[in-house]
Image (cartoon, rainbow, N blue to C red; front, side, top):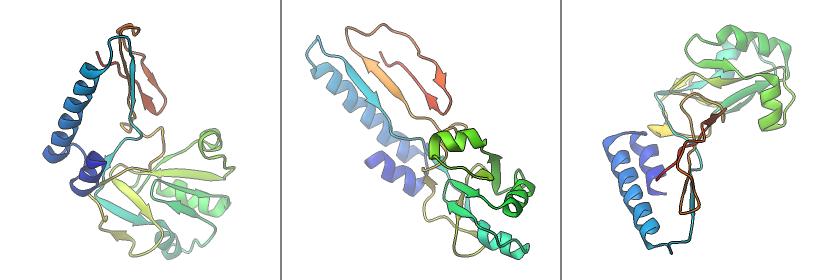
Length: 180
């Protein structure tokens, strides 16, 4: 709630967002202390967060290049079944707004889509489907990106008498940490 709002408004990892996270950490510590001694506590965050510098309207960019085929744009992904659009997106990848091409098997696994190509935004960019080619984001930070995005992790923590201390390691798109 409050951390999400603060990270949207000011951006993630700002002093204000960090203060909210530290207060949340204190409250979680209070909950652990108040639990009966034979209880375990599982804590899971719902998503990562990223600082955003600008939006990129890919449909406007493509139209300016004479590419008008089908393109599905969300803030965190652009996908197409059109080979011409796929070729144009591949040419844009790594040049500023369009990031990594998401492998087809990954798109099928996480989104259930069969596409000619799908891409995530470059770091600190969100995609837009309206407005100017490049715009100012409505928030300093956001979420809703592809789950395997670099540095975009959820956290799982487990604490209690039945829990052996240790780290579970990292899964693609998911970081696991143990909190003692």
